[in-house]
Image (cartoon, rainbow, N blue to C red; front, side, top):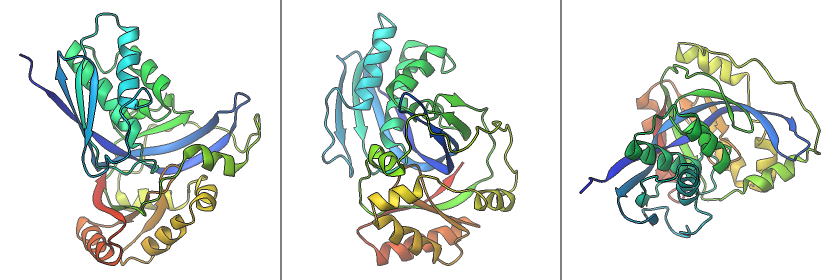
Length: 291
């Protein structure tokens, strides 16, 4: 009997995000430096059973096990593309907030593809996995190997893996689910409208944390303003994070509402997280490291 396979589905963090415009087909083109946090969901695959999914954990409430679930969509899409694929029963321990701008569902889908690849002897570099990932969701391709990369287009264009100096951080979500489509509607771009030209996807980032912090401080997240109009609670989060002792940078990730604060070391981030947890017990707050 095959033993269960397990993998972590780490939170995706947009360190910066630029909206280049909206294509004629309605999709928005972005550029973003994406890193991954040390916190995430946990996905297990029990081989041999019919394809199914169960969900538990502190953030499982309200999640449906149906055809819309990204784990099942990813598994079904790969099975359709690869006849004879061995499947199984998935169990998801949901720890990340839902609809929060840190790619929880996308990371879960990518985790499902990784487990099925491992079970079936498919290399993670197999182009089919990338095709299926892009078909399932915009953030799924970058979550496949969960490495720091520049992401562009609608998520399908990935730069090479980047070596990121450890960034000590606090992730915060105020308990507000934000629909990505609502944020893009608030952005208000017409089909075919351009805001900026695409840059050249760099193969390097600064090798020291202070240099990287300086570069990030000069960038931003173009979805922050429309997201704050959709979810005003983001304003309170960013204001509080900016005021934490030792905070070097506070920014929203993705389309929100999760935000992050960066610090010089793990001690400062841990102290800040504990103070904030006492002050805001209803918020989801996690000290972590981006890599």
